[in-house]
Length: 202
Image 1: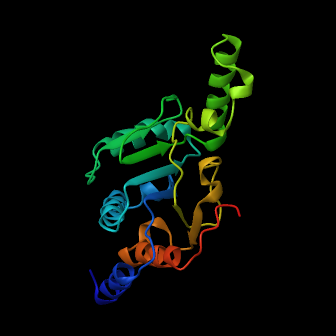
Image 2: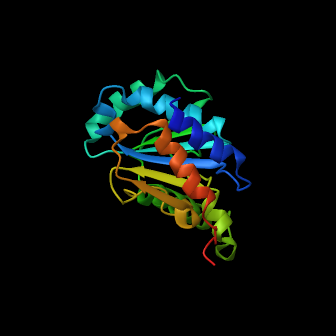
Image 3: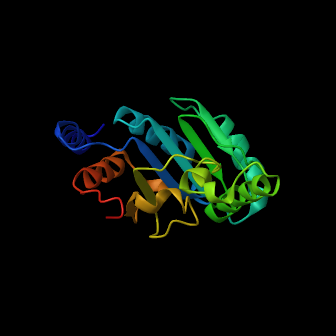
């Protein structure tokens, strides 16, 4: 770690402010085409857990659906510090692993899956319509954990990512492209998070 990076790391560690327990990263399939992209992701994951994260969610926005199988295969070989669950659009079961990777599974699609499941249970008489509340929906989402911090590289948009779960998340946008993302960029995101006062919609 470079001298400046060590300086940032010390500021993060010495601060009394809380660190995010669940971190989300939003990147694109094109980001993963650049040389060293998966090595950058491995360093990102290592840093996240080293600085207090319990869970990391990686959302890969996909324009070309034919790329999904290749991306899924690449992620199976990822050298990650914790267990990994890789989700693709066909999956509709909740993800349960410290590292959750979503490939092209958009928030609208995920929400539709949850609503469809509730409708089926109501139609079957297994669920009273009056019992349909936030908890009922959240329990059926593929990614049920709401991130504390969402990091988006390259552009200021979320790309249909976790539209339900990220409503109270702290959003951090950086114009640094994924191929140029360094340790200091993650540490800057943490410092920014520590300096905010979370309001949770209030």
